[in-house]
Image (tube, rainbow, N blue to C red):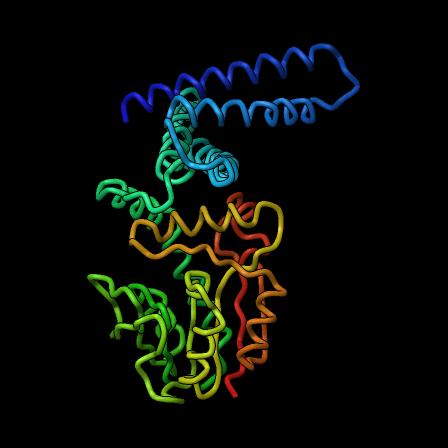
Length: 334
């Protein structure tokens, strides 16, 4: 990894210097083009060459361009969001001196980019992620995303499940953090979980699920919640049909919508960061609005209410990771 880090810094640093030099020279020519447009075009011109150099020399990756290039671009967008967030914290929260703040932002952003490129963008499909990278990935995700995610999702579920919620099954519950937060907001709800992979520590009772047939009788629960689970399945409609079988009143889904610029790579990046460290299967099966409508039609589920713009991420990360990529929907089970 030391050799890779040195190559990463040399190639990245050389690319940054070349970008600054070229954009400064073109701006100095006095062309009738806004400076920001020139800088943007110059930055775009360097993306593919730097990508190729990193792929060939830094990480010596054999992964296909069709996978690696979109992921590389997604990492660059993430790095921009991280740089903005790190800058705000360094300058306005910690009130660091300008030089120290600048160095801190560069180091944190570069380190994050290196790790995401090594373990995601240029990693072969199915490549093993060692124990230390898993712990590091989980720690970063827990600190930066998980707490806010639990708070926002529990609030969204609490606002979506009708009064008198009753007995609720959390399908694909993970460690049950969202379920616990939901019950704190809604005392009329009692949640138990089911999952194909039971975590070492869970906050609610969890039953093992084979991924095909839920181990419960028909109409066993008032509601079933399915939070960021269906895109991990090969046939979301089949899982949705099982949820409808065991739900008396309704189903609440939180999932992704494949729409917007670079929606696929962005969703893959978020999915990988949040789940790879827990060995969750990642088929990246995201559905477009039309595909969701077809899945609901196949299972006979009627959409009662739907909302997007959930506010899962704070600014400026929300500009990249929220958009129209998330939704919560209440479906009728009758």
